[in-house]
Length: 453
Image (cartoon, rainbow, N blue to C red; front, side):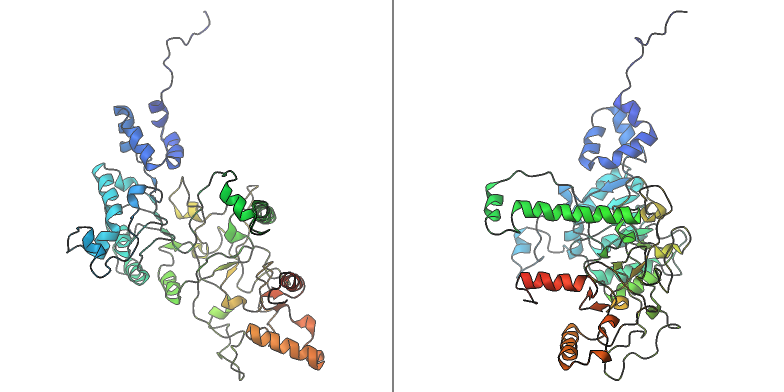
């Protein structure tokens, strides 16, 4: 028998490749919506593959779609002039105006029978109303599992909180809500930007000062990357919630959001979790709210609060743990794990959004997060070292305001009564650890004629 020949075999086409569900599922999330739409118009085969397959629109990112962006970003009606200048219907509501572009996109997807295939929906930075989110939670035509609405505009948080409470009510229908995870509190994922060449504008800014020069900016960027690489190597993961990253949520959520997270526990997860510090446990917290000096007791009870600070897996500097115990992925209650950025491309389950990925494939590190109130006077804002309640209760100085701390420290040094309050007792002063960062901050401030100059 002679050697086999393949001259009669036809080459594998793009339609053949994309007909493979696994290949389409891995490829489609990297393609913009416009590319998928254009691809479906090239041939009948590709039209069937793209629009009939449940994988093509499983992950839908509309944050960069121009038709989803409202060009008018000012008030809806200023004295009745701008609104009427657009020649709109006088009966148009605020929700109709702001959610119009997105509703139009969803209507087109519904006509193409692709809307129910969307399981992960990213709307970061767009104009999203609370009424539209209510539809994701309650209407059957949507099948969204993971929803990202970070840094959206014109979102009525009060209404959204009401809709979330309604969606998770005990009398809700079975298998509702379909949305299982919401990205809301953290910053949106950064878009990669190509390196820009040196222009006249950058040359002009370089002549205005050392720190505004291109070299200084590149150096600062590399320092930040080096810090991130070091944290990733020490914690064995690139997920910032599991690193000593400090503040993870730029804007402190209102107390009402903590109550919403409590109501949604076990039903809807968020990219934030509640603080589990002992001060939030009535059985462990101190009964009094304040001392005779009018200063809050370091162990007094505080209401449920969202954790905004990631402390890393090493725990307290003294005991290397924490009183509430770290959250261990796969062992602790799933409500203790936040949704991790970026939004998963190839999975729409809570596990895909919550599981930390280690660099060596080993067991994920412990998760320790706290709110600002539970770390007051016991956490360094620079190096992120901290001491728990059992190892360092905090001195009377640490419980005062920064101005009171400064005045009391100066009084101690001037009066020569340091034996009443030994220096080594104070571990954190004015937000910096006394052993390392406070001295460096003072020297940096003195060199730049800052507050220590």
